[in-house]
Image: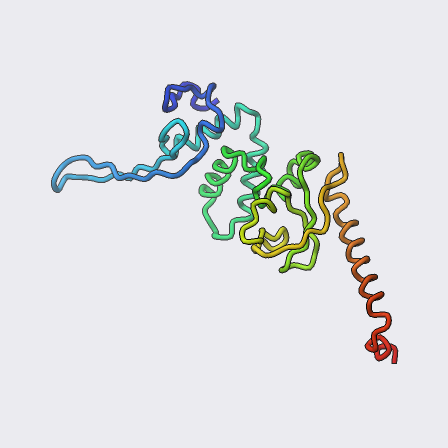
Length: 220
């Protein structure tokens, strides 16, 4: 295991460190100087502020990897790295994507139902997690297809808007159905439910338009 004897701020050892201890709170940047006058030199120093204190960024990355290895969560980290690469809309470097994945892992983002990627990520990599999630079926103003979000995302809606599960845009929404079938994976029944809802919508529309003069024109 990497950094077995590394002493964390506050005197903790790696074996005692938790993800909460080393969770990325914010980045730190300073310029350290040596020498004087024309011989003075500046060296940039990047660190991460954690619950335990400031840890140099390169050390922090290795420490998080070590804790992940200790907790047997390397496959989960690899899944997060793949997820970050698939959502790399700013063309960040491979190292930046890995660092972002480490940040997300240390913060346990995949366990947070308020995360907009909670359903799609866990559906792909940890489907069993969704068995106990508060799933809500919604229809967004921007996309016609029904989609799924969590109740926690709805509770934290900003000005009545949430992130669309299809296109990612923030928009208003209509709740179609709450909850999922106990003991089953919500996406197993989503396609069926969407087809049923679309069928019912069409059936209601046909009923409402039965006496419409436009129907007669269409027949002609």
